[in-house]
Structure formats: C-alpha cells, structure tokens
Amino acid sequence: MNTTDSAVRITHLPTGVVVAMQDEKSQIQNREKAMRVLRSRLLQAEQEKQAAEASGARKAQTGGGGRSEKVRTYNFKENRLSDHRIGLTLYKLDKVLGGELDEVIDALVADERATQLAERDI
Image 1 (cartoon, rainbow, N blue to C red):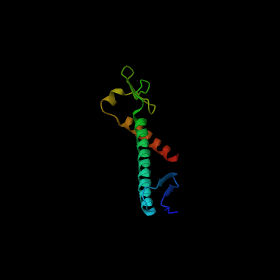
Image 2: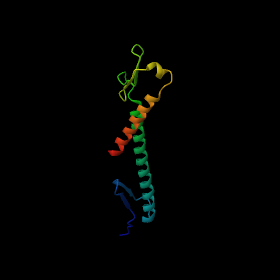
Image 3: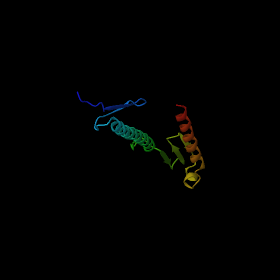
Image 4: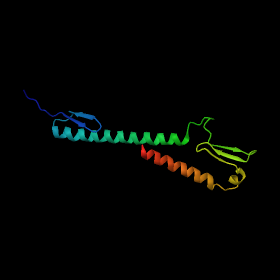
C-alpha cells in the first residue's frame, strides 16, 4: 500500500475553532495552510465581535426613535427644563436658553461617569 499521511487538523483550544486541511501532498504545507486559515478565521471572529460591540453602543446612544423616548422637555409656561434621561428638572428655562448650560452639562457628565463606573464593576 502506497499512502501518505499528510492531512492536518488544528484546534484553537480557547475558542474551539477547528481547521482541517488535506489539499497539499506534504504535511508541512498542509500545516502552514491550516495555520493561515485558522489565523484568518480568528481575526474575522474578533472583528465581528468588535463590530457587534460598537453597534450595540451606538444603538444605546441613539435609542429607538419613538415618541416615548424623550430626551428633554421645554415647558415655557412653567419656565421649566426637564432632562428625562437623568431625571433633572430646572426651573430656569430662560437662563438655560440664554446660554447658562453649566448645571445641565455637569449633571450629564456626572451621569456618564456613574454609568462608566457601573460598567467597570460588572
């Protein structure tokens, strides 16, 4: 019997990705080709994971766009500004519209920091 054992199977243990190669006549060539294929599959999986994370973060920032997802309410009769994302209500709408945004910005920054700290603790 005249056979050559040249097939190769490589398993990436952390992810469980398996690549089998038997295209070439030499086991060394098959191993090199299988490693190239394995590297490209791992790279593609990592890129897909990062794209999914970025997409999820983008969706969280933009919301669904429905009418119930209000960001802010400006009530001119009561001279009131309400930011619904952080639960801030100010009774000085005229000053905020005049450019005094410090209180609103400080509250938004504080909320963002709290969110980031909560994500780190998870």
